[in-house]
Structure formats: C-alpha cells, structure tokens
Image (cartoon, rainbow, N blue to C red):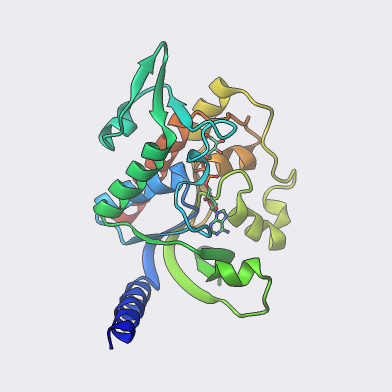
Length: 250
Ligand code: 48F
C-alpha cells in the first residue's frame, strides 16, 4: 500500500545517507552561519563533509536578526554575494533579510554537496590516542527528553566546533582535559570591531583534529561578543574550510 511505500522510501533513503556518512573527512557541529559557510566551501572542494544540527531548522542565530527584528548586517558583501543573497547598502553596512540569508546559505551549501543531519545532537567526542577522531551523537528528541538511550558514533578526520556561544565541543574536551584552557571559556563584553577581526584571526585548530569557527572562537579565546553582525561568522567558516582543505591536500 502507498502508506508503507512512503515509509519505506523515506527510511531507506535516510539510512542510506547516514551509513554513507558514518566515516567522513569533516564533521561540522552546529548549523549556524559559521558552520554552514564552512560546509559550503568544504563540499564545493569535494571534501566528504556532514553538518550535524540539533534543532529542526538550520541557521542558528541568523533567523531572529536583532531581538527578533529579522534583519542582519555585514561590513562587506563578498561571501553573501557569492551565495547570491539580496543586499542593500546603508552607509558602511550591507543589510539582508535574515529569512532569505538563512535559507540561501543552507540551500547553496546543500546544492554544493553538503550532507546535513538535523535533529542530531552531538553529545561527546571520540579521542583514542592523540586526536579527535569523531563524535558521539543521539537523536535530539532523545536528549531533550533526557531519556537513558545509548548514542551512535560518526568518525571524521576533522571535527569543527561551530556550536556558537557555548563552544560545546570544546567543553566536551575540557571535561577530561581542563588543563587545555585553565582559565575556562568566557566571551568578552560587546565590541563589534575587535570581535569581527578577532574571530577570523583566531579561527583554527585548538586540539589535534578539532577546529573552531564562529562564536565558539570568541568564547574560547575570551574575545568580545558582537551581536547581529555576521561577516566575521562567514569569514571564519570560509577560513576553517580552507585550513582543512589544505591539511587534506598535504
Ligand atoms: O549560534 P550559531 O548561530 O553559531 P555561529 O555560527 O553564529 C553566531 C551568530 O548566530 C550570532 C553572533 C554573531 O553574529 O553572535 O549569535 O557561531 O549556531 C550554532 C548552532 O549549533 C547548534 C545550535 O543549535 C545552533 O543552531 N548546536 C550547538 N550545540 C550543538 C549543536 C550540539 N552539541 N549538537 C548539534 N548542534
């Protein structure tokens, strides 16, 4: 009957995608602007990449603009231009509709070949000897209901923490290795200029196999927060992708 045919088509397709991506070159944790941009450039370069997002929708902090006013800004238009997002120049700023921005980033990344698993919560990292080698995941419905259900695992040559302000993957590491960042993790007071430059400059590898991009960079290095300006997030995502592409080419 058509009802079970639909169910078979969906479950077979989903588990085909999943089993094909149990081993990867890059796993991106968090589908905000930094993570999606990283995913776009990695996938475009032919790198086997997946992005894991615990929420239903991809886009992280983009959708709400500032205080739910759904407009966001950047200081230059290079990456949004590549994604063909409609922009408006106002003084030194470029303005975008946040709904179009989130949708276009996601659409172009998907079209470039990025595999995305939403409703997938990363709850731990795998380290067997010296490097991060993968992630431990569970379905978001299970973790949000706090059910005692064991996870499954996805391996990767590189993991990107693009989980935003909480820098969740770095925290997973610090639980067993607090000596890595003895001062802990805390982003600084709002300062757009410093944060926009700093987030790109400090994007990179924090531990063998683990890279950080986006607001998790500010959290890890105590850089300022920056509010609804997104250029630094996109550039950080692009930079982390370029760094991993270079590593894989070596
Ligand atoms: O927070 P988020 O948008 O991170 P970002 O890419 O961008 C930050 C800006 O949105 C904004 C800002 C600068 O302009 O201040 O806040 O650094 O997206 C992070 C995504 O990661 C998901 C989370 O649901 C969000 O969509 N996420 C966080 N932890 C996990 C996760 C996890 N453990 N597993 C799966 N997804």
